[in-house]
Amino acid sequence: MAKIERFEDFECWKAGRELRKTIYRFTRGSAFAEDFSLVDQIRRAAQSVTSNIAEGFGREGNKEFINFLSISKGSVTEVQDQLYTALDENYITQADFDRAYALAGSASHLIGGLSTYLKQTEISGIKFKRPQK
Image 1 (cartoon, rainbow, N blue to C red):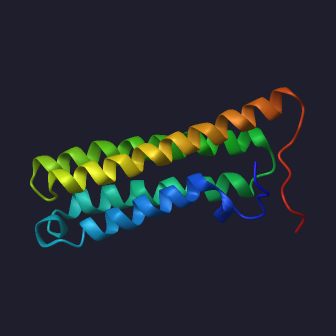
Image 2: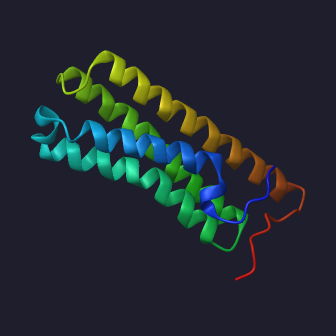
């Protein structure tokens, strides 16, 4: 694993950021933007993906980090569900849906990989090293 000094170094955070940027871009569209409830919900879910990775990284131990990664992964799935609503309401095209859904899938896969790694290091007694403040 590459040297991690900041939450921004995680590939899963980077993937989540791309997903969030895509969601924000979609929700600026005229028809989508008028659905205030869906815009608010999908944006909050997309923001939650990266926020929970960052917050988990800032916690003291792997167990807490793994918990926050689980929440982050759940938020990715929430975004995927809301993308279906956006598609069904013709707020986004099938191509936009496919691209965003794939971004979400990539983020979910990377989050799952990091979680698995942290669980394995927890079992072996190795603690994930965070930089000293």
